[in-house]
Amino acid sequence: MFRNQYDTDVTTWSPAGRLFQVEYAMEAVKQGSAAIGLRSKTHVVLACVNKANSELSSHQKKIFKVDDHIGVAIAGLTADGRVLSRYMRSECINYSFTYESPLPIGRLVVQLADKAQVCTQRSWKRPYGVGLLVAGLDESGAHLYYNCPSGNYFEYQAFAIGSRSQAAKTYLERRFETFQNSSREDLIKDALFAIRETLQGEKLKSSICTVTVLGVGEPFHILDQETVQGLINAFEMAGEEAPAADQGAAGEEGAAGEEGAAAEEGAATEEGAATEEGAAPMEI
Amino acid sequence: MNLMDSTHSNPMSLCSQADSQRTLYPYVTGTSVIGVKYKDGILMAADMGGSYGSTLRYKSVERMKPIGKHSLLGASGEISDFQEILRYLDELILYDNMWDDGNSLGPKEVHSYLTRVMYNRRNKFNPLWNSLVLGGVKNGQKYLGTVSMIGVHFEDNHVATGFGNHLARPILRDEWHEDLSFEDGVKLLEKCMRVLLYRDRSAVNKLQIAKITEEGVTISQPYSLKTFWGFSAFQNPTVGAEGSW
Image (cartoon, helix red, strand yellow):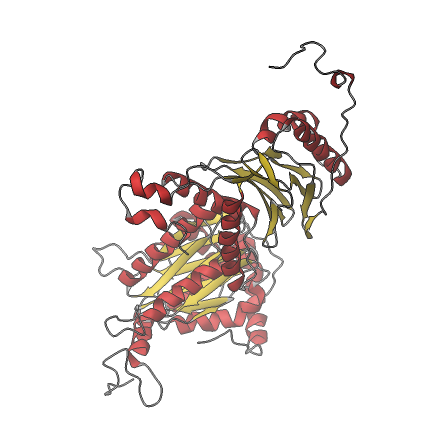
């Protein structure tokens, strides 16, 4: 993307029918550190890479609990993300108060999208520079949505945003058809693998990532570092390159070790079989 | 949606000219509503009377209405306020349907919403002069609750408003049980309505029974209860105290 004479205002169209300021806002999302989400029929997992400015500082919070049944992971301008999270929390709590019932996630993402759209049509505003992966439950089960600075939103089986997210997306594209019926544990494992893809060789440790789970009967919560490190150790011990194609395994953290061993043999055949999939999830 | 309109611009909301803008007393009122949970859902009964003070003026007032797909609302108290509540709920259900997303407001949500409305109006000293019974079934879950004009709200297996609390609830406490059949439920409600007919001066002998199940709402055609007045004590009623006074 190069500078041009139509990119100063969000209220100026280009002759090709583009709003460059909105597109530049979406670039900001691509610069943020990676966040990924995946869902099954009953659970949604959000995970993100924690980048700290320097060794001396703490890392930024990128995953927020919005309500017991909704969580959001952000990538881009985290300040904008915090403001939108506060809006989402406010909407959820007001709905809960009036109706004594959780706000259906489908409605929250529409409200969020409409809020983002306003900023693409006012000369005195700028678009939010943050992409949101919203995980939540409603009457029809578990859902994962991606909200763009443009005001668009899409539902996904699995998605990744932020820097080096393409590597994670490639991994998720290979595996996404199994997610719908995945167990909770397999879903978390897949999330960790996807995160590892974005690290491009850097060692995956629980100190540089955050993993959160939400499910039917399981309120949104962040997995503690010990649990995450335990899961990482379990599959790394077995030297897994990619998980097995079998979905029967209902691993607890203890059982993950034996899954890892079985997966090693499965991995080689898996690579061969996977390439013929080619089916891509919904893209923007 | 602007529910609370007239009084908020005037700070002296309790006195002088502002009084013409708030409810002081009811005019046309309905009497008791009774609701019970039964095997397949909720049964509700209410007569069709609209009293104008002590005059039994209107005799075809429908005091129970379906709300959305999953709820049934019965009201006692000021009929015009009930009609206002129906307008609010109509708008609420309309917006809910407009989302067109497979989610819908169930009886619990409608009950909570009504509680908020009633309590907010009470806080502004401009109540909707009603006692409401809200029943429904959603995803197999039965729900029965009540809200009063001051915002008191609760759920129970059987509820009633007004005189029903004093005359019908004791009968229900003794005779209600889990998983009543439809026939038994109707018999129980009729027993309560008959007592109310005998003892409540604002009751009229024309009632409807409404049922709500997972399938939907059915409100019966109006009918009347058989009564018996042939007690021997009613022959020569003044035999113990002759003379007029």
